[in-house]
Figure 1 (cartoon, chains in turn blue, cyan):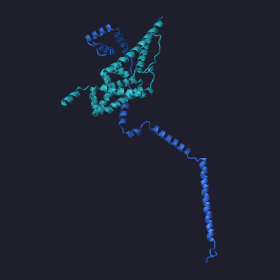
Figure 2 (cartoon, chains in turn orange, green; figure 1 turned 90 degrees about the vertical axis):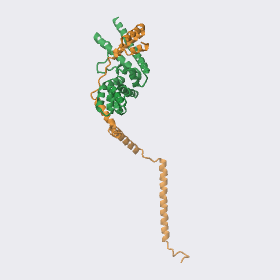
Figure 3 (cartoon, one colour; figure 1 turned 120 degrees about the vertical axis):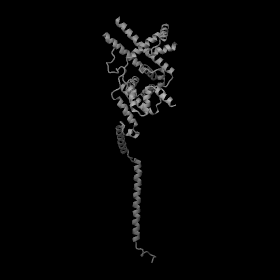
Figure 4 (cartoon, one colour; figure 1 turned 180 degrees about the horizontal axis):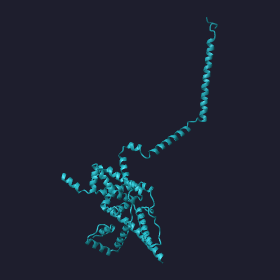
Length: 156
Length: 209
């Protein structure tokens, strides 16, 4: 039995039983090497302690949950998306976001700056003045047309 | 050729045969595998992530992956090796993603709803129980503190009784790497347990003085 085989056995002290010759060689190794013997005893104590770590059985609904996941996984993507458990919260989130965006957009409608207002009012004033002048011109032309042309000297 | 194929089929282990039947569309065989391996897999995952609820979710994921992979299943290795390879990947991914850690609970909390570990009790019989519980708590903490690969290797070796080659296949490394992982991991655990024993011994000698 090699030292490596002895170490393997030490790592797995509760493994399948060794045959008589191997067992004898193993014990000789331990007698000759106190370090290996100490390691073997510590490993046995460790395994004894680890044996006490028991885990509870899976809950009663475990199988059902597995089959439910298999069924869900077999569904097409769009259906899984539509009926996903997180969907209601997503919809609520999207609705809240839409309302927020609406409120922000309403609050932030473009407001004219004072300089822009001044320019705008000057332009408007000029526009009205132009209209006024045009009306005056039209009025003047009307008056001009109404003037008796036959009395004009030099014309017959 | 046909005889050779039939011979190979007959030589297969029962679990691999069941899995081949699952591949052929037999859901009853999947049910049998689920019944056989639900406890060992959830137990392995519970020890890996230290949380029963998370372990069950991961266990469901493992069986879902087994079912999904049925079409491509080839019995090239033992069924348990294949199964634990999937379980190890699921567990290690969950640990890496910190999914498990977000729902983590203290290791001092007893897994089966028993009383929390208390320090020394005056009654001798209860004292022995407490010492054993304290030792187990220390070992569980020490296992939890191991690097992920070492922890997987120890749990598969000690509790699932997989041999070196199966652990190597499950973790995707060589047999010598598995031996090295186990040697280091058990060394760490032995030294932690030895520290506890020494502290226990020194406390007892102080009390008797």
